[in-house]
Image (cartoon, rainbow, N blue to C red):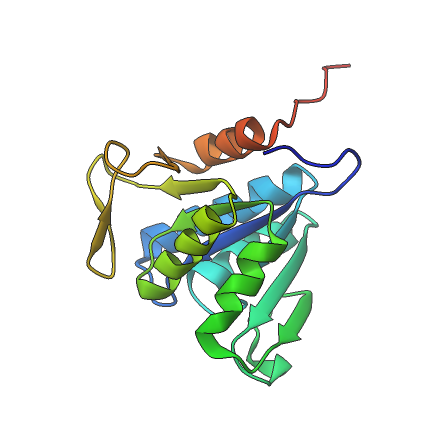
Length: 176
């Protein structure tokens, strides 16, 4: 998949709403790197991984979009710049993925797994960050780099951004 020339990439950060602190720290770093590239960040707009990614992006001046499951924009985390209330619950995951150019998955359970599945159906790149070289468990479904066609499994935020660039055909700007 490649981007239309001149389009700002929109990257979804998908992850748990109750993630361990290490994953929240990772999500914040991912958000910072997304913003540093000049890309927009889209997510489910709530807490934990979603809030941390938005926090990182906003810290670096990035633009954040939260696709909310309910009808109350006040439910968005404080780092969402554009909250979109849907009232459609988990079905919002299809909106997140349809809007995004690529998905970075950090921790999570069934909701994150559904986003990954939508991405595969919509032929969008899926990058999974696994902090350890082992299976990643999404609500009882195990994902690893050897048995999950269509997924790119990496170990850190920098590798995730590099994988997004490769998957979308984005070239680094030449050094001045």
